Image (cartoon, rainbow, N blue to C red; front, side, top):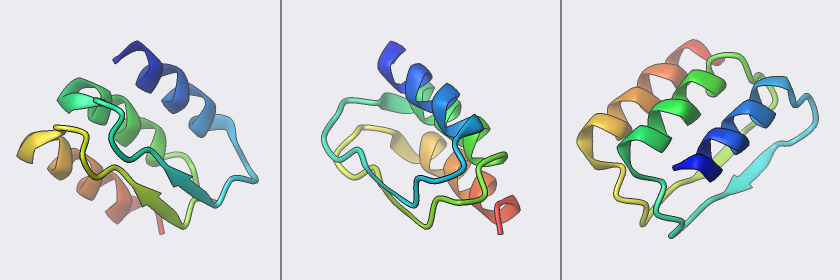
Length: 71
């Protein structure tokens, strides 16, 4: 989860990254929440892969909601 928080912090301020593949990194629901918070502010990311991370339904919904605001 700590790693996901660091990535989320970086994403919040990143203006060049367009693809992020985090497949199978054990992010979990709490990590997904950090990612979702960051994705509300990141406007450059176009592709995000978080499959295999046990983010559960709650984490998926948080990321989904964040991406709805990130257009």
